[in-house]
Length: 68
Image (tube, rainbow, N blue to C red; front, side):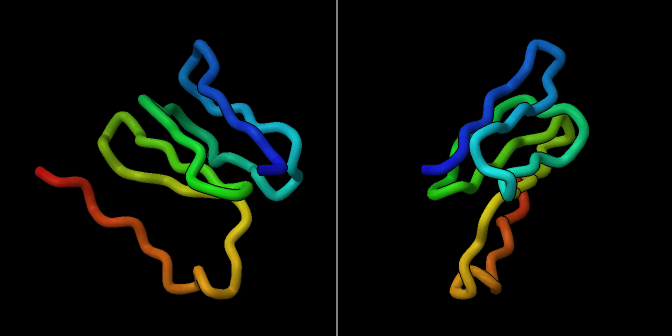
């Protein structure tokens, strides 16, 4: 893992250690590192946002919609 992310007290995400690990703006309720220089977070409206470095083999990656 080249980068790290954490939730700030204002619920935004801060990442460091890898220039490609740039989090989206906005609030998150939870987040996790999803592999090598990748992370995903859950927004207050229960949508999933993922960011970071993706290999060519990951081009078809689409997160599943949240279960109701």
